[in-house]
Image (cartoon, rainbow, N blue to C red; front, side, top):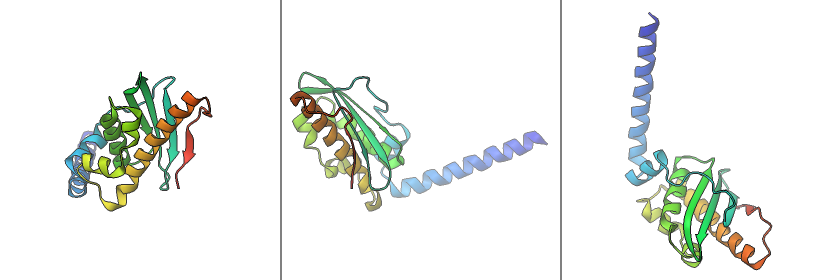
Length: 159
């Protein structure tokens, strides 16, 4: 009897997951889904060259970590406590900026990120804004370090 209950529960879980996947496919591009389910560059960098932690207006927080090789971004990683679209934005953004100069990376706009993801629903555009704002703050943190004026936290709230 216990085996049948477990099989029934497993079947129910599988059906719910299938339903959730179908619903996501109706709203999000395949790229968003891929990056949300299998995010790239998720994690931190010990003693990063650039760091920012920003809390977005929705309450999600993102951290971006940068490692430079001279004047180019050698490695970029992120952490977030946000939703799937926020994960996808951090993943795609850190992939996009690998190898760029700080100037090139700071020129990335939310629209560039949204385009690379194959679009985002209007209610998730703030996820791209959070990711790009966090990147821009990480670049600014690095530049303040170079100037000797950094507070070493890179933390801010984003209105």
